[in-house]
Image (tube, rainbow, N blue to C red; front, top):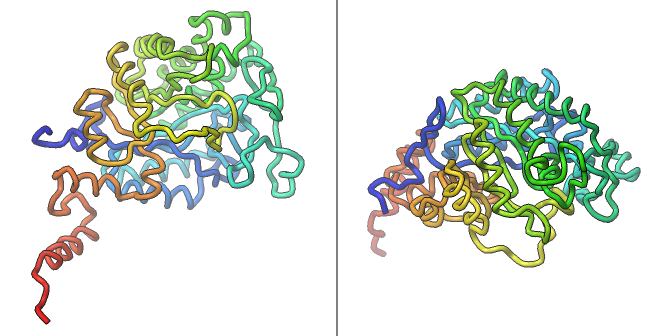
Length: 383
């Protein structure tokens, strides 16, 4: 192990430096009102900022109203949504962390129920709680799965309009004070559905061979990079493989990563799957292995020569450190593990010997915990 754990070695990115390699992965909370973040979101992110993460991302945030996954998802399609998002960026900044926002469009997986309401497509039964369905869109009329509505196939003019909305979202993210923007190109959402031959049946400039299926992703990236300052990092989340015969392969993703790098993307966030089925409810029958997506981050990093972020069942400090030591990724993203333990970064620092004296903890906590540790180290009183 290096003298200083890599997990707690700062990482320089364009114009900014992350104090450590631990990232709060975007996690949908389904708690927004008309796309506006609420007090729940502030509390949600404050826990992670206090907990010591180096970077914190706001959840998939719709570039237009019909781009939300559910009626409770955050949005960034109007200026009225900016102040609440700015508050989240400030929360991270006040605790020495970088803030990021994932800008997204759910595409054919939009108009869905919140997970605790079933995760299926919205129907007339949902209207009683005020969740009104809307028409999803996609590259083709292929539905997500049986029982889901067929999306409206986007025309070329509509595609161009959407590219502009991604650029507008990036401008608002800048106004909100975020350090990082991530383009969501994974999990069966709109950009991913253009990339996968299983969901893209077009025969025009946006469908067919890989270069044409990549076109939408690249146009969105170019539009965002044109308005997002060069001294602020741009991330891109990808589903590295569809995991379905005939779908996106890791070779496709390496080619995409090379093209994205040429257009100014700084980090590839390597997830996988999600093309079919619910966005909010996992349907796998077997439990995946710890770190099951790390090999994708490793291969993209090596073959596309670009920084990557590993995500997916990374649960302890030693595992995270090993990923970095083996040069499989440059950043470690956590989601459910942080929900379970928002202080995971601080505990990881202790586990790796990077903070034996609680110096990294907020002083309001560290002052007490230092004394607690000393008390626990004292011999027990004799009977």
